[in-house]
Image (cartoon, rainbow, N blue to C red; front, side, top):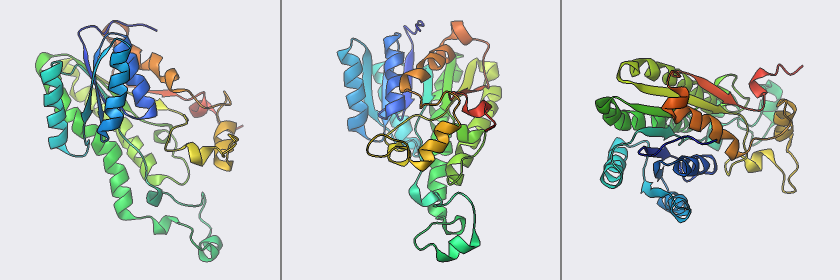
Length: 280
């Protein structure tokens, strides 16, 4: 799929990761000047260097999405190099093991006998707070910083990254699920709030894609699915994980004013049918 993004400036948070690096490259391939933002400057710069090597325009920028000053500095660096941001992809996010339970269902007997298990009652409040902030606040703060210039020019597109967890929470990960649900809700709120200044706000809700964060949880060393991975595949009608490239078509459609100029406030699943399947 090709759209015309010439003259556009895109900022992609979490751009050094597997999924968002593919998004950043796709935006550049379609003509946008791309700022790859990541807490890890080396990861951001590696993606930017690859874009430039393929004939695109990109810079890597260090950015902590939980610190407004850091986002503002990133915005200043982008403006100095490329001009004001027209497209924002809020891709930074993640989970923490200490915000995750060891078991799917509460069982008092297992809780008593299961040495080393992390039950719902053991979840670390600090880890829950961090997970919620990284995902929700890490979407809200960049939106505040980058949408300000968009509102002044009267045009812009924001694409947030929600999740299947926002529709139906997965077992074991209550904090991450709640945070992604908050992103979906915030997407709708911000779409309405910014509608009078022609800023469109939508979200992509990926199903299951193998990343550095979840690969060891979903696959064994030989590539076969773990027990949890098997459950996911059994409940994904297409019977496989998505590839990062399969996010690109919806992303390009959403950022193109010509293709989706009347689309705002939507959360679009890209999930191989997971959200449609009842399990029967």
